[in-house]
Length: 116
Image (cartoon, rainbow, N blue to C red; front, side, top):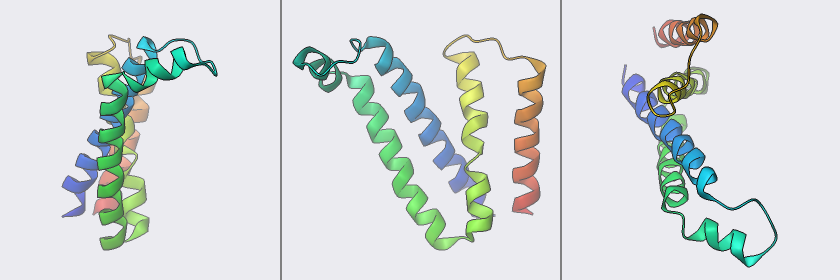
């Protein structure tokens, strides 16, 4: 049962990193091999926060796969899809249809079965 809270934290960090990556990409200039584009990347605090959250999630992932069976740990990483769906609704105000909710419920059920 120690894996579940760590997997939830890992998934929150990774989904949070993706949310801030989306914010960062919305503020960046169109991609180009020029100084203006790279400056828009380097001064973007959302991009920096994306990196910090994703980096923290990766370090936690190192701990998880070192101390828990990979066959249990890896499927738990799919919880980030659940948190990503919630963020899509709450942060980006996207509509989530019944089919997507069914997919999220199946992911959660699979994680529950694996954790038992």
